[in-house]
Image (tube, rainbow, N blue to C red; front, side):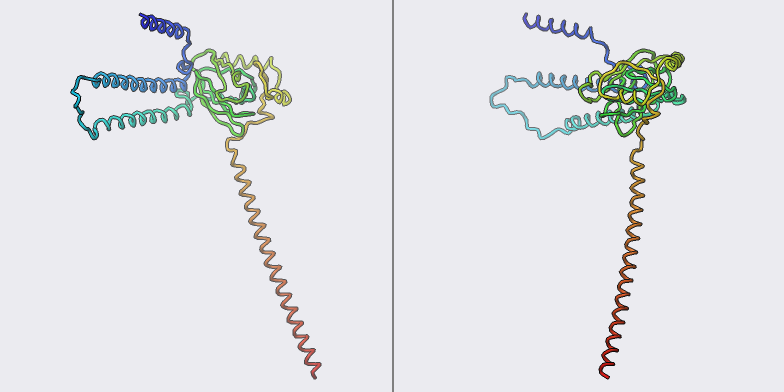
Length: 333
């Protein structure tokens, strides 16, 4: 009776908690990239669920089949050295599962790293998303505007985010549109997304970056492109320009609300270069050439001076020897 009451109560609590849960954002995709990832997650969950159920089923079968029985006291089970069929199943099935998931993961990775499927022929909207402690700055170079801690995007158009950081490494993530990607201080990373459905979504920094990490979030609103163009026009008419002095204040550590500016900080504080090591390599090459040239020149000069001094000393030595020999002969005479 007590066990029945306990199980009933536990079931009631679990159902009550789950009823109030919202669907997981990663399993509620609103764009092609997120849909690809959600499909992979559900596939992995399905495979793992099958494995768990199969293992528990086999365990229950073995516990029942080979439970203690009324055998004679001198009974000894047959000695088995191994079973090729069992060993093939134990080793082969995990190998097949891992290989299958690896192929699926690689294919999906190529999909989410490229322009979203169905948007290949459309011009992407380029947005520079940069982080600072603990804010997000969104620069629209094509539109000439910038926002802080909120992002407006058009639907049915590919989005190309250029990610970097003004401070520690962060991670840009909009769960319902796609996976996360790191934003770093000395280089730019590119993330391709797209929104199929208008709506409001949550975005955040998915990488711990200090005491303000928990509030390092931003709001995303996807809207039809005509409505997006109207918003851009309104910003240009009403927002104040972003100056270099104002931007220096914005990137100082702290939290801010949602801000809007005309102009972008890219005009006076451009993003890092993608190939940040190329210029250094070129300088090293030039440096090596100059060093080799100067060493060659100094060696050449050194050899000339050495040869000249040796020749001069030999000449002086011959003159002095001849002069002394001549003088001794004269004195003898």
